[in-house]
Amino acid sequence: MTKNPIYNAVAAFIYIALVVLLINLASQVNPSSKTNSYFVGLMMVSLFTLSAAVMGYLFGYNPGKLYFDGKKEEAVKLFLKTVVAFACITLSWFMLYFGGIIA
Image 1 (cartoon, rainbow, N blue to C red):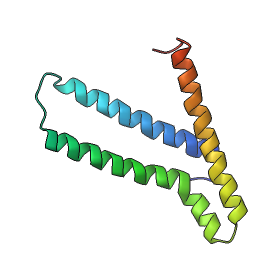
Image 2 (tube, helix red, strand yellow):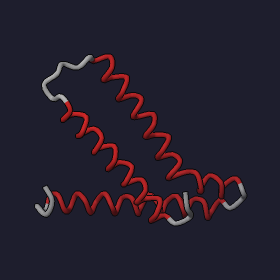
Image 3 (spheres, helix red, strand yellow):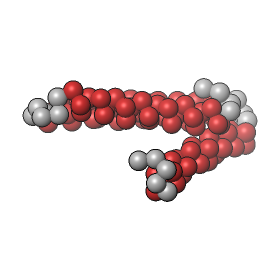
């Protein structure tokens, strides 16, 4: 990704929003059908693994690169700024939801 923590946090949020959208669309395809728990479990573990890889890339690629280039302090700062930016985005959505602004 970038060395801009805001872009990284926004990219993570967009990824999560797309996953939720996909799950909602999939549940509307045939909501009354019986699902095979084996396939649902397979899909969920696969989605978790994919999400861990994507988030690892978004949050850790540039900090890791900086760290191994000997810029340890810059790496830690970038990682923490990205986490704080993502926390602010998440907190904002919680406040909008619990404030009744979005439903």
